[in-house]
Image 1 (cartoon, rainbow, N blue to C red):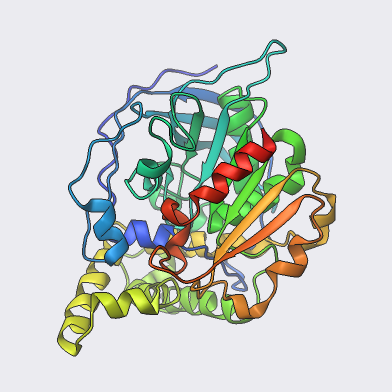
Image 2 (cartoon, helix red, strand yellow):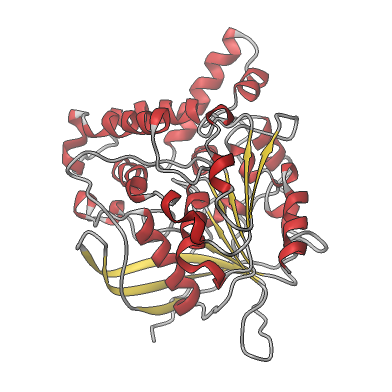
Length: 409
């Protein structure tokens, strides 16, 4: 079906900005340059092995990243295998098309099939905006879940970690097309995830669909579109509701900071525009935990030094065009009207210190009740929660995962 590509260098160690930004769900759209999005067509499979041990190394961000990076421990699970699945002549929902869409991924473990040929042990894990599948290969996540005897023991499960379109090593605007790149939406992204799983990896059933932040929202769309394709769905850190209110407004701020900067030059800048720095200031605030920031910077001098390190870390490896597209992509996200159609079990978890999805809105509770086998859990603030980024701190919620796997097994 496709040529075999040899893997190059291993993905570089994730910097603090990638970890923290990837732990946020982001979106926006009203600018006419960034239209609508959804899905379509065929592909070829290109696979390549590569050691992928992305351990978070940046201790400057906060206490949670210090835990992740402590001594750069060696993974206690099988080496990931990297590959690329190429979808040819892909047509997006808004009518745009791309001759080849590359979806990069990593897998850990081996798929197992029952007598009927159905895969029974595959787990799809989807990242947040600005991140990649590699963000999950760090001690605070993989170190809690993928090892021997752990909830997603990679000797028993087949773990799939895609880089969504516009992210990581998958096709994205910064590859060269810039603002001429098709304006993908969440439904396009979910369709491409499904194509990777079903057509690229030949997995016809998932034991679990799990997503954080943007990946959380994708989990809701998966549940509505594919329902019983999976035994269960576990969306972490989002709401099954169209982006609105303050959540919409800060995303507008991010978009406007970049698009209205004269240095943006309609996406043809030679150096990253100042607007990207301003956009990252917004990310730094909305995705953070006030408690954790106070612990990390308890004095004025420490706060200034910490802020400078955060700003530098957030800018590392980011691109203005990619950021605009990533943030814009959720314009077509609205699972609320179809929640009642979901028949598969759903366990939705948020944390009480998540400023992107604050509990005082009371949006999640009544909406999850529309799902026949849905449950919503709100984690109280504790020494295990880290604001919006709690979704990647498996120690805070892995007991719920263990119970959910037992219930859906």
